[in-house]
Image 1: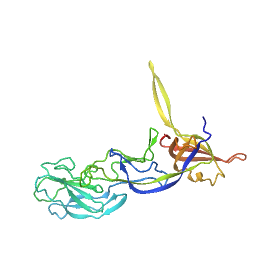
Image 2: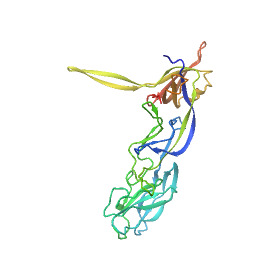
Image 3: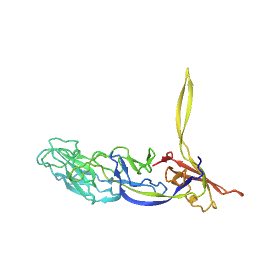
Image 4: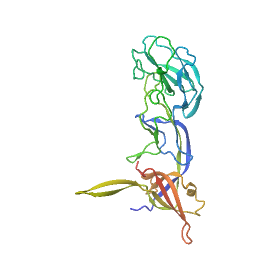
Length: 339
């Protein structure tokens, strides 16, 4: 078996997908798009914008000194991928509990960009259970929690600094916390899945529709480009970027200690050019692109898939074909796609 009927494809174009909600895979940590591949070419990288506070939004006791009120500083936040500006608001009312002494409020930015103080269920003590007696309330699926206010008395008084909680990740949702890693392509056991992101930790389930209550994480949005592929018409000698292993050893008294290391090598191929100046692939030199290699050009499967920076070194011989020795510098090894 040889590769005389093989072909190489490269990412020659990009197609915009406007900000769209990613889908929680179920672990509240991995969020997936509807597409298998996200381009990472310069100027076409994914733009990830989870709903959350970006700047400002500090909540403080009312400067007026009035009972049961707080002030909220001007803020910006991301909602459905858009950067929204919310004006400062003074004397936001936080009503005291009427039955039990303990209650928590969630200070939120709603989907329309307005502020709201959402009351939790009153209880005989504070609770860490979202939606429970004495706990913080669930907030709308498309809202952002920027702070909580904890009240432990039915008597009207000015709200104190100690009653305002604004710890990021606990009482305040920022768009950039927790951080995440892009998964611009995802192949597991030979099957290609959907591209998306993986957060460093699972998102808290503090959102829900009004009824029935189904706890959910904050909404996560992404804008990205999907790649279009073009054949390299005359090519040869494809080498995928793969992991190699090496062993080092050290002799000590009575024995030898060994250690193994892994190295990710460069991918490479040779392209035979028309004039070596105006060929399409040359315009993408030094760009990060997707590449596909098919051992049999007549079959859609299987193929090798990788994403890396294209390097080109051209040769212009007097009596032979003009060639480009191409390298592919990847962050991860090529993957085998079989289904």
